[in-house]
Length: 233
Ligand code: SAM
Image (tube, rainbow, N blue to C red):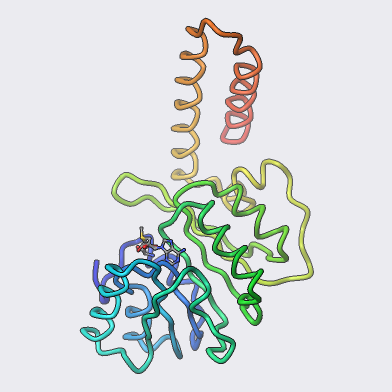
């Protein structure tokens, strides 16, 4: 991966950035995504935000090497604290982190009024996607697209959301599986949930050997297996 050739995961996230966007890429180790978009002339400006010095230094270096200093600026700071009103950022990408951490970054950003003017959030959580969907919907963001991809034997979901007053009610299954992903039911989607069934079956086997009273946990696990089976069949 470099500024010319992104991983499929980052390429998918980048594909949802609108032409002319003013972007903040938070957790921007190496700043590959903003450098790639700047080199293509796709974005007006970008901040590459990093909280850790090593990746921040790598981002700065990459921006210089890619010759995009006029468009991309690396900033050291926690989450959305690197975004100032005068940046007029309209798009945020947060990729490659746990869903809980992404939700915490968004929460803190909202608290500090740093989400004002943001039209689009493009998120690629490594896990806890249902929690992130919950965060988006309870904070006035409508999920407008979802993608599921597989790269290097890992499956990733990419969520795209926009600020909206027109929020559809979500069912439990929409949160768990993703409204768009469960409509599409792609082979990768099925593969992900078949693997989840296996994990739950393993848990069930372990519970069967337990000497403690785990009946509630057993019922809960069996219910989840059934829920997934009904979804992917
Ligand atoms: N976004 C890149 C990608 O998807 O390939 C890098 C992902 S890397 C696994 C996660 C990066 O997020 C790390 O460089 C880490 O230092 C940074 N990070 C974690 N928490 C952060 C926070 N609160 N604010 C800014 N950056 C953060």
